[in-house]
Image 1 (cartoon, rainbow, N blue to C red):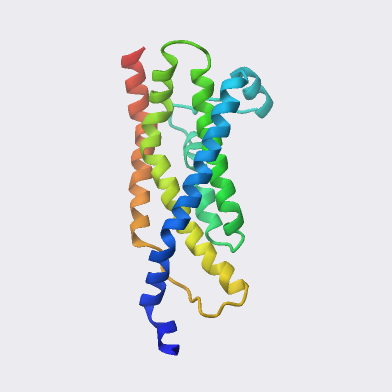
Image 2 (tube, one colour):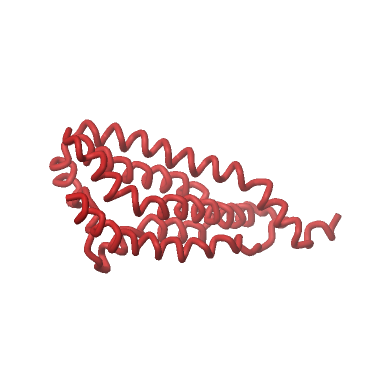
Length: 195
């Protein structure tokens, strides 16, 4: 009995068997946030939303530190939530907020009733989202796994031992760099062709 608790394969099996529910939870929270964001963005004028929050609706296209942090902000938050046991509560909320912001921006662009606005939303938000959304979900899954282990240790479950994160998560770094490159290089180029 004792030897099963110290074998590294136990942690891997636990990680593999519980990965699907974590992914479903994070994806469902993200999609729920998208639904709320689409409703909010479609029913409230962009100018009012920007004025009330103090932030522009559209992400900046030129490269700057602020634009980079804006692009990576939810990813960074998700990473740090994985370092605390409270992450099990705040990771789903963060996924909900990310979906809300993403969808609200898209719906706000589209809601101006211009026939070209759907294409503009696809260019401005869709191109970078091809890489940023999957990496956000992957980081969320990894952060939830790490936070769940910490939460179990805090609750006194000594059968949980420190385990390494999934090495596939390292693929998120080059994917995010490609997403940044798409945000600052590809999006302006496609916009210059389209407009």
